[in-house]
Image (cartoon, rainbow, N blue to C red; front, side, top):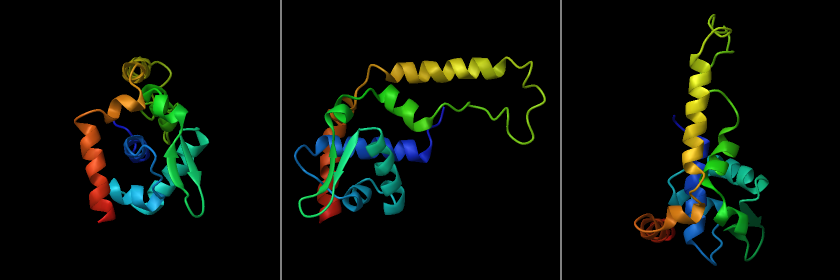
Length: 146
């Protein structure tokens, strides 16, 4: 299974914020640190805010921060929310697959997708930023602000 670009970026944003305890970078700074276009990062941050994973404050002293919910969120839950409930294959696309009413592949792929998500359920966001990822994520700060 391959994650969408938005989910990939959302996970990178969350990981970046997880290592910046007490710091509140702007969306632009986070986008630069994770090598993403600002406009895409802004959309992802909005989605993460709606999920209660990220908080954003405007004005002087504002910026982004990971919420307590975000820090302890299951990666499986987060990926499910970001990816949505769509099928792995496009059985109902135009034109619809002629096998869709009798196909067993769709069910097998849905089960495999759920197994993929379930394998991510025990992992929380905080787990993603332990060594060796944490130090690398912190070093991105020096590159993006320098």
